[in-house]
Image (tube, rainbow, N blue to C red; front, side):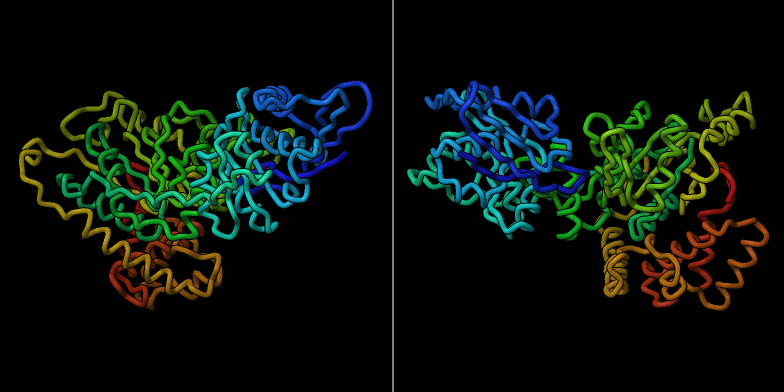
Amino acid sequence: MTARTYTVAFEGVEARLVEVQCAVSAGSPAFTLVGLPDKAVSEAKERVRAALQALSIALPTKRITVNLSPADLPKEGSHFDLPIAVALLAALDIIPRDLVEGVVSLGELSLDGRLIAVAGALPAAMAAAVEDRALLCPKPCGAEAAWVGATQVLAPASLDEVLHHYTGRAPLAPAEAGEVTGTASPRDFREVKGQERAKRALEIAAAGRHHLFMVGTPGSGKSMLAARLPGILPPLSAPEALETSMIHSLAGLLSEGGISRDRPFREPHHTASMAAIVGGGRGAKPGEISLAHNGVLFLDEFPEFPRTVLDTLRQPIETGSVMVARANAHVRYPCRFLLIAAANPCKCGYLSDPNRACGRAPLCGEDYLGRISGPLMDRFDLRVEVPPVAFADLDLPASGEASAGIAARVGAARERQSTRFANHPGLRVNADLEGAALEDFATPDAEGKDLVGRVAERMGLSARGYHRVLRVARTIADLDASASVRKPHIAEAISFRLASATGGL
């Protein structure tokens, strides 16, 4: 007696279909699980045995063999419990075999038969939709998986409900998608006193997804400014929300099945390991740069991160994806994020403060910011100094522009970019411009060309720096509602890249 059903194995954000075959044959009583399972999968047979006993179903005194095909694909995680149990019930002729062959299932079993939530329901539902199959998952995962409207999602709370559904005693109703969540940021730029140039830099960064490096004395407001960036970012589009939610689903971060329209804002501590930032560890899980996909990655105390961790950011910044290579896994994750980095000008923090003397100037600043490699610094489109705010200014009433006004301009600039790139699937924002597209959309007028040429020759602007100046100028022009890139746009873009305490061009 042989039965089959289906589940998935995760490779990055991709869910690969796995056929679960169960054979019950004569021979010495045994329950064998094959197909390259890890420890969690191998233990599934004990959880399945106990769950069936809780339903008063005794396993026959025969040889039970479960094969997970393809056999050379590593199987990891506890979500194989439910498909193994379903295949076994079908092999024992307790539920119809033809019904379970059209189902992709995943879920962890408790010893009393309850189904426990697992990560990855959303990408599993997408894989099921591609194969034109239904998805069977634990009840807490149903609202998340139901966002994929192209497939039927069944979300039982226990194995008993699965049994009743497939025997026709109590059919399950399809799960409903969770609510779209989105919260207005309580932090407003209106609360920031002064720092107009830093606010302008953040507005440009938000409008074109340009990476920004802020340097300033302790307490000057770098973290305060970065924390208000989500309030001016446009909400995620439907495709972006699905992309981001797939990664968060694999990481188990989706709350109650709701898909958020807010852009991610990740701020890992500088003691985070390379695996935590880039991805990896057991099972090659997504790191902070992937969890920040379509959102913001804020790295405070930037030079305090290990040099090896910082330099691993160079390739993901350029390509928008990261390959996590391990001995038993090569997994690719998307990571198109907006990088905001903040640093003190030196170890003591007061190199640029005229009111306090740095005892080791200028070597203190050179040693400290020297931890950031030149190639990495070259990848920042915008660099801005954040000066300390005078105590007298702190007593003044809030008079700056509110986040809502800035957000409106950023949203309008993003709309112009969406219209411009409608026939270019690989382009979403100006930061993606390269090659012929960069020449077509960001070539400045004659005066702008002359200005950027003179600056490049005099200041030693690199080829990457030249292209980044053009991209930033294109974004400034979009904020200005200008169809062409003119000299003032080029001048402002160059001003955010001039040599300063943050390093050279």
